[in-house]
Length: 350
Image 1 (tube, rainbow, N blue to C red):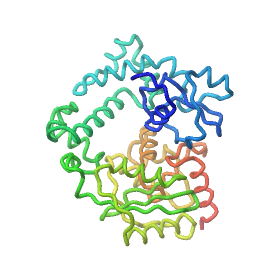
Image 2: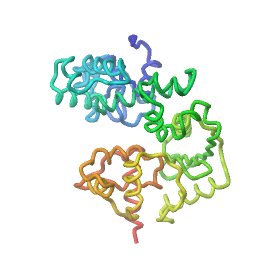
Image 3: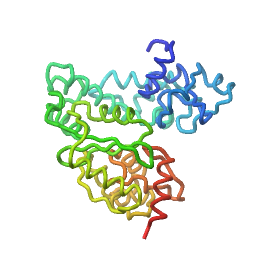
């Protein structure tokens, strides 16, 4: 990647959480006093709050402290190695190098390579390879000569394997995605609520997204990115009624939400989301309890990831999951909103 010279370029990389920009610069947030690497998974601040520095030292000299989530100083020290591992994984999508083979090439033990890579990018080398292959598959579906060609260009080896691994993530079959998803129509609304702005989107089968932000533009952009191949239309009779129910729930007047859902999920995500929906209003559960309820008591991190990828806030109440000691962990729409939701539910509990 070429050297980044302008703030407009830097901001685009920060918005995309571009891994390849790590090590080129860090961005700092005036309102929090924290600086991060470009690919930090944390929620993005308003652009006006952001300043850029070429190094961690420069950020700290200006009074900012390192983010405890993305560890920019540690990542900076290992950026070249992590980038090399990424290129090695991308070079052979059909048979990605094993952790042992990667460790031999970069001169680290498998344990240390896994730890450093995951600390830097938030995923393991295998998860990175899988995500990169899926991105390649989507790109090839859009521009390649056929769905079959996209299957092999992305290294899946067979059509059945590709369809098995990608249909749920695309939200439709690869062939329909390639055709532009013209058969998938999604209606949406954005409304003001006690948590800022809320977007509710639904297919003809049920609600597929409930999201929060301080900006309507951010919500609509997120919807377009999530359902890039769909026909998005504002409004809809059912949607108005469903949105009113969600607002009543948010205000504490309708503790139970029983609205139809149309969400795509792996088998494990589905079990986690079912467990979340069974948590009574005003109560919480730990990630360990959710993992156990989903049938995999040791898969606590996987349960946390399933919570983090929940597309329908409130309907799948991932805000009701906390650490074992009762502390709040992450929330896709911000810890401040999670804290407000839990406090309101606790006060309204009957």
